[in-house]
Image (cartoon, rainbow, N blue to C red):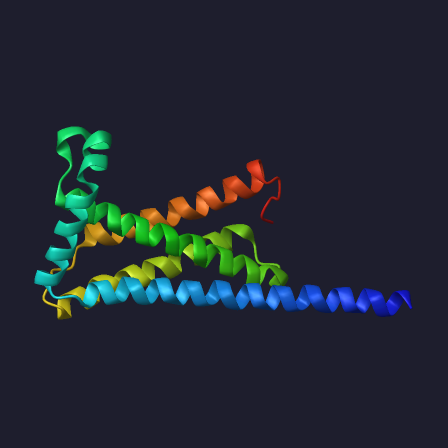
Length: 166
């Protein structure tokens, strides 16, 4: 009787993990799609979108950065933020799916940031074909966002939630 209850509990946990993996993977692919769709926008639409966001966020940006808030800064923050979210999701997916393979944490960390770097490279390549100029600076900002997300994820898990990522 106890064995049957144990198996049912394990079955529920397995189903929950599979659902979590599917949802996490789906969100990750959606973020990549949004990043690449933004890169496909022609320069005029991209400038209009940035102008609208800048007008909306200008009071906040001015409060944080003083009079130095520009549309250029907003674009760079956008790159950082997109890849911060992507870096978090990629790291989370790698830990969900590869933990059982006993991969070293450093290797998983490099894999996570490396995957984001590949997405950033394709992001800037897409911009060539959409009439916008690619920028190596944007690739580094993207990698920085992914790196910061991965570090913050580990910090939160280890020091705040007391669940170290192994």
